[in-house]
Length: 591
Image 1: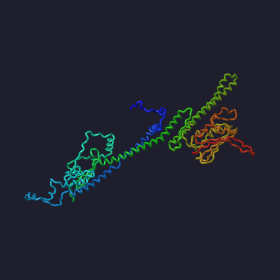
Image 2 (image 1 turned 60 degrees about the vertical axis):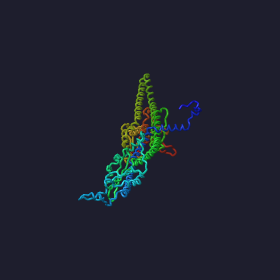
Image 3 (image 1 turned 90 degrees about the vertical axis):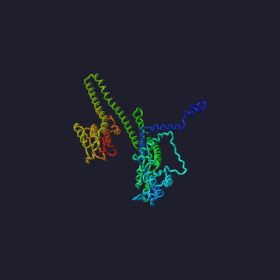
Image 4 (image 1 turned 120 degrees about the vertical axis):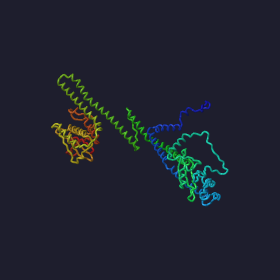
């Protein structure tokens, strides 16, 4: 509808630019629904809950015993009603057969040798055994208020009275003509009819109206004429259920006819329809509650997962910053465990990246020193005038080349260490055998004038000396420690290796009789490329990676390594203790 300029309401611009509280609340609701109600996880939760609820309701509608119980109750009610009405009809509406009467005119018509039986004259060919004039008032009083149709058949199956055609004196008959154009049922009505037809029993016979034809076309009437009541459940051509009951009309064991009672088509279906409609209403309410609770449940699951995924995307794309992973560990459920695991994984990843960066910087620094020395020697070699100077420069070049080779080998071993430990499976390792093998190899390779190697193993159960790990890498640890101890030992000294169990762990100590470790170097000696050796003759002979690699291997096996000095008690009181060497202690958990 167009609005003229004169009738258009005047609105201040400031008021149009400021939304109301209702608009803001609507936007929040729309944003919440857009974020939560249409996610994949939310749709799955809602659909699964609704499908489960729909299956439950369908089972109630299809398998419940309400229709069967209602039908059985209706059959019993009709049988009781039929027996009462049949008894009333047999008492007051049948002809008297106990009185013997003979028509005199029939006696006069007899010829010689003929006889006449009074029983042959009980039922005249033009008379009914049941008096219709007496049956009609009985049916009008007993059947009309019950919305039940009653039909009375005589012993031959002939229809005597139909309650549908009973009219009182002065009653005006009225018939409603069908509309010229019948309205087509709506889509919901057609769907509901299909549901009803699908849920009905398919083994029920179809009811056919016989009208005034012989009643023996109904099996229940035939059975009633044989003095036995019978009930049949049928469906009409419109799919409506109806119940028919036939009861014999008998007096003194003489069957005069049959009473057929039938319900109106759709009576039972109307009750079942109302019951199912109530179930559908409950389903609609339950479905609404299920959808709401599903959305709330999905919000508690999908929203944290969405935030974790967004944080993971930021971590992947973050270069300069260090994004924080949301912490849901307080929830105490799977999402909380997932959040904690992602946070720990991210922290470990950042630590690994920092370690790689630091390792790369240390490698570049350590390689730069021999390369600088090598370059200076190469550039100076053409300028050397004497053979002695040239030989000295060649010695420097060879020394730097060996140093580079040693550095590259140690760097390669250190870079492969983590991958090898993660890729290989841990196995039980006998530390007694490992130490005996390492000590034997060292004894065979060292010169006779070098330090001696002593191995001491405390007597204990052999099973106490097993650990879970990698024997080659553990052997590398103690080979490095023994080599380090030998390099600090004095001439003629001894390197002692002791093995003993302690409090569920295995303790291995490597002692030397060297100068010891300075007090500020106990932790620093385990850093990469750090070396602190007295004397200029040892320069360039060590890469500084041995203790760092040993610590890395021990920690990968769940243990730890420490360094300390060994002391001798002073001879005189008040004097400081004398350092007699260093001790490296490795502690590994028992298998």
